[in-house]
Image (tube, rainbow, N blue to C red; front, side):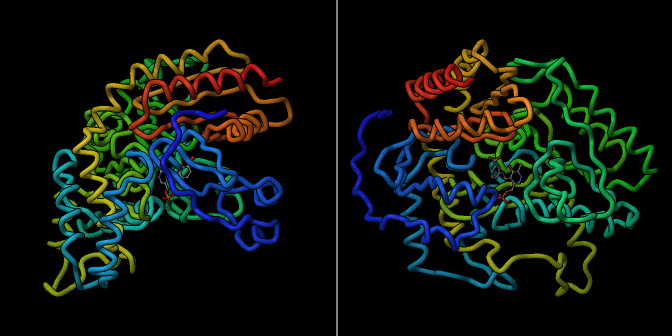
Length: 454
Ligand code: PXG
């Protein structure tokens, strides 16, 4: 079906991909053998829609991969990248700077709450996570607390795919092939308990006490051993797990009581997803560091960032001696890449000029009603939501976990809707420019597909 007004777009000429033409690309987090027999190829995007290689348009229910918050094909971003590429293509990242990187850091520092006012650039969410974990360890060492080596994450957490992030992450399938990973790690329990909090709207009222388990961990590991706790304010990848009321505040209190750094991984929640610039504002909890990526550039260039509180930055500056010393032995060739900075600055302009974070907040109640309207359909065992994100959990086909949701994913793509599935959970997170009629269309199509599911 055709899902909306036609686009005025020059069709790209794409040579059709033969089976052989698909072979060389080892695709990430993809069933390569299945895909190469049933390819799904996108060739263009504008606004809320992608165009498939057969010319059909499909509605984007997930902002690409949770990143295209201002919608696709934003001319201002494309032009900023092109202008930057012509003026200064690359500038060495070490012992050297270019204006856009300073401008972007200052801009982010101003947007972030509290004294989260120093920004380290990376190229992805995964790199942001590694960077933040390393800052945490080095910070304690500089303060003379080298004993703080334990990094705490949470079950069902996703912090990217590099060794540190995998270690504090809580998805067993992502870890099992890679041996012991980072040595000193502990995981908090996750907060997803459908027996207590199924069909919650926003923060579940049950489960705040699960934060107290951090207190038990402090006792177990002994004083001055835990360096940092990293959590997603709302867990995205494992199916939209909204924190129970009071949970994040409690984590903050326990971290304060024991000198532990609290890191919020806002790779998904940053840049308006919950109706505020950052989740930490929404929950009224100031973390010591925030990891960012995705919406930073509206997905138009790879870029990540870590924002750290003033005291953390100053600890590094004060510890280093002599004054030419490098305070933090870390960084990437492409940290603060000019093209990424240009894309990020243009994206931030759009967010501000179109007041998109507030727009997401205003649309959130409509979104909530719409997704919960699916609650009585066959196989739906839970629905949860916050801001413009939602998870719809299905009961698995016996002996075939993930098959039901993946089948819906494939059929939705056929019918003109892009969703994400994780396990047997459908995840939705549309661009923040989504219109009510597009929300309606998403739910109608999902309802149809759910009714057809045997
Ligand atoms: N932290 C969080 C909270 C994330 O969601 C990363 C770190 C890693 O970012 P990079 O840029 O290295 O991929 C992520 C990424 C999905 C999905 O549909 C989620 C992500 C990436 C791809 C797919 O669940 N999150």
